[in-house]
Length: 135
Image (cartoon, rainbow, N blue to C red; front, side, top):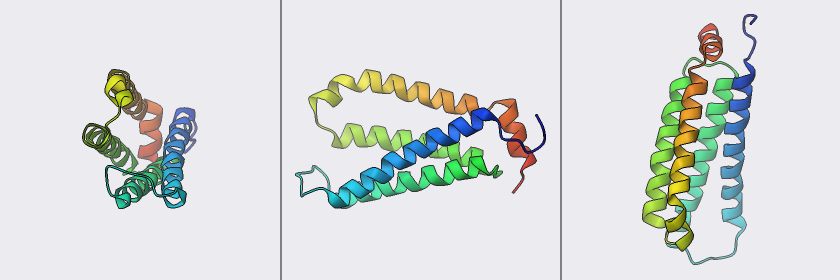
């Protein structure tokens, strides 16, 4: 691979993280546009949650794409913190039959997604690209 050429797998990862950001950005916008719905939590929490994860995803995606040296730990810790937040949110705030019955599948997908993220970030081509672009 020539110097400073982005690995294809890194581009795919950046796009996946960008989709994650767009989903949360859509949730943020929808929160402002939805009618008053009965929620089991304050409405500001909806804005905060979606705003934080949209921003974290945009920063992680951009930092990885442009080869920032801090992008790997930021993405890893961001993913771990998201999983902790997601499962805390799901266990504390979500009270539906679907959530109670679907948690094994959701846990499986969570583990697979984290493993995929960590394995992709450990790829030699990605490690090399990020180490060449010290910033």
